[in-house]
Image: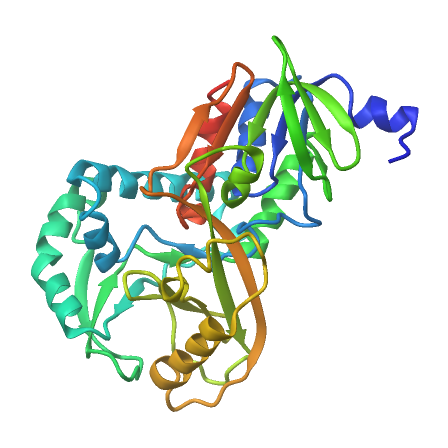
Length: 368
């Protein structure tokens, strides 16, 4: 890249903090650093023209886990660990709403539902509802999960739906626009289409090599989540999420956020459309990728479930299809740690970026 003196001086010199990734975590990290260090020079590097991972591609669920998902988590986590996972999500959503305001993210608390195609899973959730409500009572002070008869006309599923009045939804695009605007107002420099290829730590600084230039920074924060392994951070696997959205449907009565099969399928209303994603459980290994293409098997399954279960008596057309890359691991606990004296990371959000991204960004900044 042919850089002028002005470009080097204004954007790429005397940098205090450099953040890789301009998604939810990266921008919240930058905002927290600005709060802590008002005079610091803060630079954010983003490899996409927009945030590249899941921050602009997620379904916009302001949720903390369905009933069956929480029960599934209890098979690999202790009760205290599950409680802390839910608490982190609740605290993260509260911080997101406080940072940007409900109007700026179009937050709507319409409640969340879970559909059951498996009678045994429904029975297990019914049997454990009171136990989970008791576990979560210190957080909500009220019963979280209850059951309702299917009011939406869904087919090929049990008539009882699990209901969670605390669940909400946001407009993902508005959220990211608000975060970017807030960062720019705080004099945080954001450079797009910049890929970090490598970095090397010295005693008091970090040298960063990108596809266009090399810079030196006093501290480096990595907030690339699903792409973390590309920068040498272990224990984080990419997980592709495939999504589609219908054209507007006249008289659409479905309102809220909906989960199926322990959260591996999810759908919601948005702008008189149905947004539907998931299916990673059909091919875990194949979806462990950073490629943004979609696959016929999963897209066909999403289309079939839309037609047979979600909109069985309603004509619809698919308008858009896209994919996002999440960061997952053997456990759902995020990785927020220092990996050098001047290098730190906040990754592995486990598909809960909207819920915990703000909090992980703050925790990442507070490592410095």
